[in-house]
Length: 310
Image 1 (tube, one colour):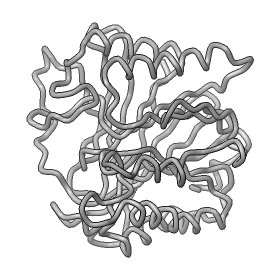
Image 2 (image 1 turned 135 degrees about the vertical axis):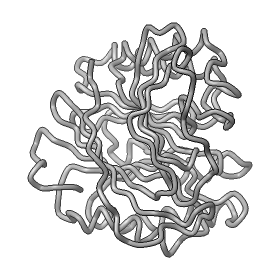
Image 3 (image 1 turned 180 degrees about the vertical axis):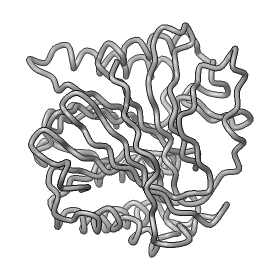
Image 4 (image 1 turned 90 degrees about the vertical axis):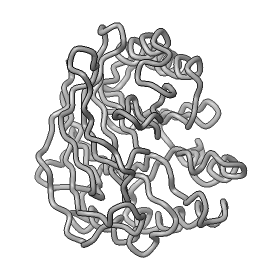
């Protein structure tokens, strides 16, 4: 998917879906089709969704995830792989089994470079290693996950230049909204965070894609010991949580905001070049604090951003 002019055997494009919820099925179908309409013939891409594929209250566990699987047929018809991970909506009882049955890749599906650990998994796609982290790991489990990626990358005979991580909860959260990956505060479990960041950097990870907070937030963040930096994206789905602007005290903040938008529904196209990555964001105004989807089908492109590789 994406522009043919950028596509060749060295460039691979990934469309990233923000989390969606079961109530907005009609609008959700149009939302999925928009990147396909832009370039339905372009090869080499895949679609990734960072959790919350089913609504917590509106859909039975099987029905909600099965509907998401049904919508994937439009991708399968074009030979476009779809990968997903669990969000908090899939963390309720009954959905872990269903997620495994419907979405966890298997070797029979010819997923290249597949590595699995419970509901965490990694794949190799062209010139990138992609790792998908399950919901609500403890700080110790987060460290273990980062060490697992590092071991996998170290023991391989050859590894792609790029390595990316996808998970639902965020590396940090704006003030007064305390649901980041590490618990109540951005600096919680600081010692484990330092190890996590170091392991990811040593494994070649530079970009982490997340969801959950219902706002578009692209930022860089350093480990609590200020030794390791990552770029991260919070994807914007339909509906808003009422969030403050991401304002933190400059002397204490480990976060540098690059782009921030609330009140939008967005999808993202990441182009993987041999030595760089470029993120393109397509956004439309949404319907405020509801989950009814965007106000129109016109998605406008925000400024592109080149992910730092240093």
